[in-house]
Length: 115
Length: 115
Image (cartoon, rainbow over all chains, first blue to last red; front, side, top):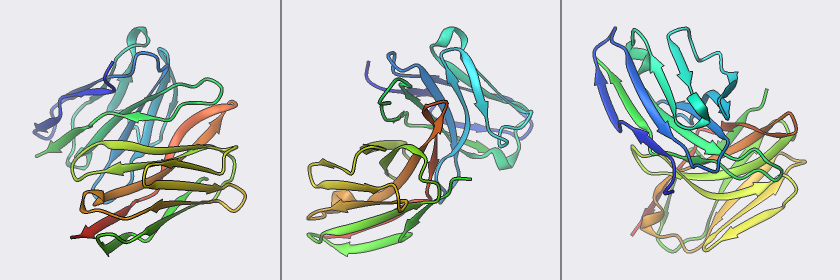
């Protein structure tokens, strides 16, 4: 297991189209997180899963966004009817929630450009 | 609401200098604190993780301290090198049901080390 994998690395889409990103976490980690980062800002929390349950969603996650983690393994983040304001780096991270808690491990991100 | 502030926003130093990056947070009820490095257009690389019960962590030329009561952390980089040039992000993990919740990030310090 080499870390957190994200696919695709880059995505260019026309406004109004739907896009889907995939994240494969570290297998021993039971938590999976999605963050969004715009230029010059730190990453902002979107949502997270513990196993297959989605436990928390940020108010940043509008109705056009949906995330899933079937069977508690990989996760997908879908954005419907993309807008130019959705252009950002989408980062996935995983961690272990047990006593002592491990740090987060981030993937390389998916850069979305909406034209 | 937890807020994380990093000072300075940017820093330029000559090669070989020792330097300190600062991070402050408003709510001391954190689970842990993590320092990350981010190269332009890339994902985040974890540098150091400090649990809330710890005071400092060291890795090679890096040393991070944590003063939870005053809401401060510092990242000390010894004998800086041009390869250290990157944005350094501080993030605190909130408490959620007794275990770690999501990360709250600062905006980062952009470090440039001149040869």
